[in-house]
Image (cartoon, rainbow, N blue to C red; front, side):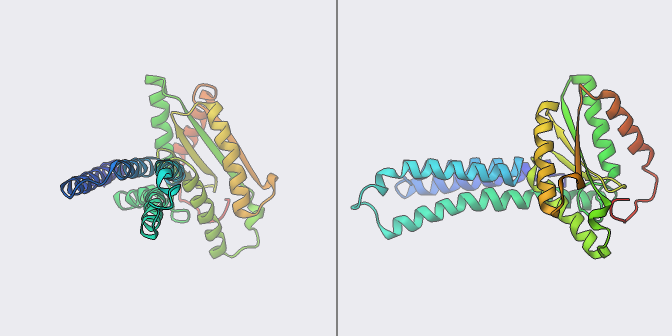
Length: 272
């Protein structure tokens, strides 16, 4: 199953479940305006988490919680209407926002690559469990084609970790380090962004619909996050950003290089 179909399925089932809940509540007297809005907010959080991932889902959950609390201010400010059961219900509702937004977004970001692994075992890197060079090269090629035909912007982030970081590590620890970096990158970007690891150990992040100016902001954030993840100094993790409009020649050269290396055997050594 493609993730896009899974996304549609989850949103459809979630929407039907919320509509069903509202319908049942109306038959028993109605959930009240505030709780009806809360259920709609839960659906919004679900859509954001499934489409954009954990980070966006977290922001959506926080926003929904703040809106819900604001709607409940009259109850919170009245000692007569405020009950223990009511507080527990409010906490449960806020916890549901967080569960759907954060946990749901994290689960979906992992499922995206799980589906790719089952659909085509030649698209996932064994060490990092994100896309491999084969998939990354074709994704870049498709992004370049969309830019040439429709003017659709994109940016590409290239992250390089110094081999010295893991020079004295065992293969098991090297793999754990690679997996940690991949997990951080996957969780920090949008669901529409593609994270891959090349055969030489570099990580690439393809940012669709993102001009270079926005890509440079993401690049700085990801580089800082990777350094923190691996506990490395600034010079041990370097990052570069290329934009579709500004770096046409460089992107074409990189894509030709990656496509030319498709038939080579991936090397399961850190940073080589």
